[in-house]
Length: 475
Image (tube, rainbow, N blue to C red; front, side, top):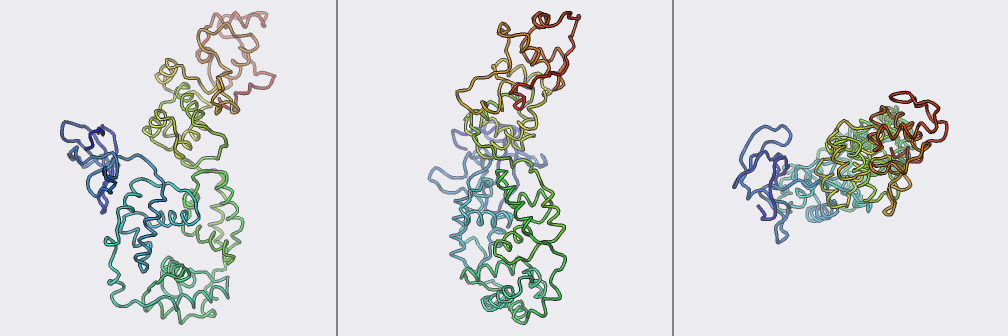
């Protein structure tokens, strides 16, 4: 183990082995070993030498580790892994992307999304574990081309050119229809078409090539799907979701809608290519029904700063929410929030998590009195202290609430307005005064100036007739 790295209980590590392996969670640490269990099930206890636990997936010389375990630190940029896989494809052009993904033990859809994003020049994050499994691959690790289809393969160029002519002459015929007619999987035919069109050599089963070459448009027309609708509204809806949300990939939108990611991706690619093949009505309905995306996707907020995120995180703590509750609401981990608070610099995923938690929790008090007391001791300002116009400005000062020891700044009108708002959020008289840092006697004295009679106990608090204060949206 690195001398600067210290294993601790509840840390999660992943295996550096190219063959993969289950994640482990540390349960206890002694002088030479760490107790560990399966990270998900918390079963299968074992002892791991501390020398096998590492803080980084690379050695001091920059070499990728192939043994031991690495501390899970979250997401990394996928660009290096995409470049590495492209180099592997250039060395082994006959090998499909699915075979590379299978050898790296990563989902094929994930690898395809990474490569597609890199081709489009888009930034995409991926887990460090998946990135490591791709980067550690070499051409020698991949399946040997000599294996092929046991001598039953042939060059796919002639068959793919024939299929391309059919698809160009008959846009209503889809790749899926051709694949079914040739008794092939859709993904195999689509990958072969893409490789041949890009000028990359590709082989397929000789039997499949014969079936494809024997096809003609008349054979395919009766099999073409009639139960389809125009994909244009679906494509536009997906585009609007990606513009409105960050970290909203096509695969994530498809997962939220409950449809196959490859189905939605194919429909969008076909529409962009002008093929006009449409989409199944059920798929279209499910995608169009998605109007909001859950975490880790979050709505784009221009002008959000790291100091504004820190204020939001502290404000939620001051409201009585623990880091565990905030992490669950934002779809992240406590460690990610702690690392952000210490470093003061947020990754896109943490940024989305804090904003998502803020939107869900900032309007109601949390259940943890301990969190409130700790935040009060550290003089962290609650959500009411900020409004959306000031919370992200570094030079802005908290306003709209008061802290203990500053009751001399209160006016009867301001106190009435603040109490009305807090009562509207569900807080009682005592809780409202605690939030404002004001004693009951002082509150009665202030309210007595604008009320003829103040009854003993909590005075009546009708809803205000004037507009609510500017910090309502931030509360």
